[in-house]
Image 1 (cartoon, rainbow, N blue to C red):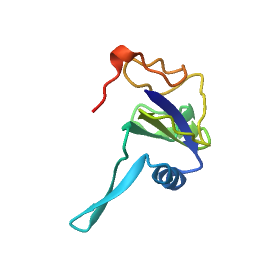
Image 2 (tube, rainbow, N blue to C red):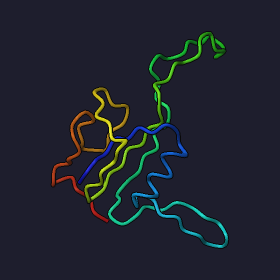
Image 3 (cartoon, rainbow, N blue to C red):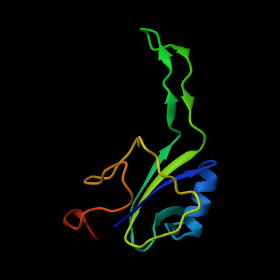
Length: 117
């Protein structure tokens, strides 16, 4: 199993690249177009914007200081095949991990945890 942690300029750029790489495929049913996983893709997680410095709030939930976000828009992809992503990053303190996978290691899941549909 291969894991890729990806950072894009924005969501639109991410979707375009994931479609171009075959991670997502567009499907249409009853004039409604949606995204489905491509062949060999096990999971796609839209992380989105990642907080660098949390905001602060008063007792009533009102914003005192806005959160500060890291640059970019993040996705995690789990797939059977190795896909080369120009946007792949290797973060140290990850905000997301797949079950059984060390969130800060390179993209390998032990064979005993591989789940193939």
